[in-house]
Image (cartoon, rainbow, N blue to C red; front, top):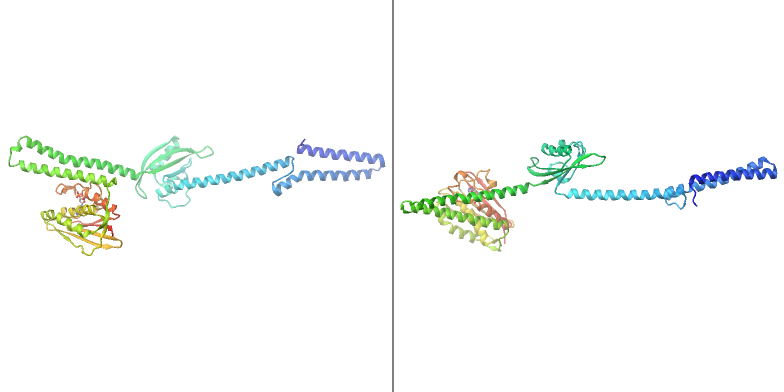
Length: 439
Ligand code: ADP
């Protein structure tokens, strides 16, 4: 049977007292000497006390020494419990710190920006993506008011509304600094401890998605418009002819020619759209080989000669016979060059010139098509490679085209791992330059 510590102590003292009394009694009965009996009782009491105290203090000493106590009494039990508890706490702290590291790594790797604020609108946390989105230096910003750090009133409204209404709020907002981005904000109220509610917001950058949607919407609108205009005109002329103009020898030829022109444009437009969508969907196969660029250019200049003559434009090739070969798909290269020379003639003025130049440049071959035409205004320059982009709207009906040529050219050049740029001085002319890898 195990005795409790307090009982043990009481028992020890009762035992000491009893023994002392007994011995005193025995001595008194034998010797009638009070002093001797007292001294003997004192010594025995001291001995028993010492043994008792040692027994009591042993577990404590062991606890301090090693936390592993052999004693089976309650102090020993307490020490073991304490030691177990310490081990468990240590393990918990290790687990927590591991979880914290994992969570930190996940939040850092997230593409989404994560923002956490407390019930007063003070920042608790911002992951690196969020710092990047708002152009913040990586410093400690926690504890500072959200509005002061991020300076965005629309986002502030979303977070404040989430705090006050305590419900999930989703909204699309546009950030203007450090650069224009469209983000979808998903904010939800969260209890972050001590019964306080803060907000956790995830910001997803949907700029590219919106851009693509706009391009697609514009594409459909443009295609419909480009198809509708010539069709309306064709319909009109056909009706006029049927109404009797067919018997009018003065106009019937003219009307039929206009119909033919529009039909050609429509068929060109459809070819371009099909070409472009095949290229964009990567449904085009390329047969790359060592190609003599000079040969391709000469063939095209010859083919476009009637068009150049009609526009009174001279096309000059400055390509040397010793030009190294390029790694290209012969037909696609021809398509690139045709589009560029076609534009250079089309947007030229009578008596103007188109010059072709090529030279090796590092591991690439650099080709230039320069014209002496009307040029491109600086604000249009970055847009000429966009689908359906046609500069100078007021004159666009004078020059046939679909606005798809340069978009196709850019795709084709990039499929060759090359780059294309345009430079221009309005009123003086433009230069389109592209590169192809050397064979
Ligand atoms: P398109 O020629 O069918 O209009 P492109 O994609 O080839 O379409 O060209 C887009 C626009 O870029 C043209 O409408 C024109 O405004 C401008 N552009 C292209 N090439 C030239 C050039 N050589 N000189 C002036 N403007 C040009």
